[in-house]
Amino acid sequence: MTSTTCPLARNLAPTRITTAGYESVVGAVLRSARRSARVSQARLATACGATENTIRAWENGSSPLASTPMPQIEAVTAALHQAGACRLLTADLAVAAWCDLVITAVAAWEDPTCLLADPITADGAFGELMAWCLDGRVPQRYRPYAAPGPLIREQTLIERVRRALD
Image (cartoon, rainbow, N blue to C red; front, side, top):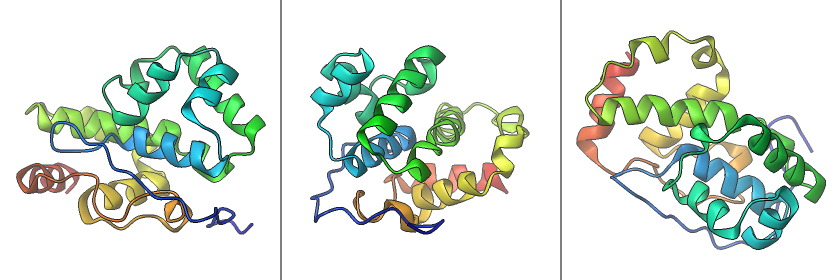
């Protein structure tokens, strides 16, 4: 394994579940990490003490992982690691949650300035994940597990997020 790629998975058929014009970034990251471990939502749920519906809701963005208590997030991460998930993907969970906060603020016409002032936005992964959202540039480490294309489908939201990031 190199620093920029995960071990290639067998040919998995990526799926895309979207809500409100964009796919949850943390959901895409979580789903990719789970797929890298080759575990089902049910098996991950059992391993981390959650329900399958909870894992599904985190992955499809209907329940934001960012609002989940830290001990539960740590349990999910530990279960993913135990199952053999690519650590390059699990390392992006916090950054992906921050991407979702920024996108949600912009979508709600809120000022994301304080969110964008956080040091996490200087992390290279933040830029890569936002490029995936806006331009469809799937980071190399996600390509075996994620569908190609942008996570944000709505052109007006893409433009508003771009303006906020400038």
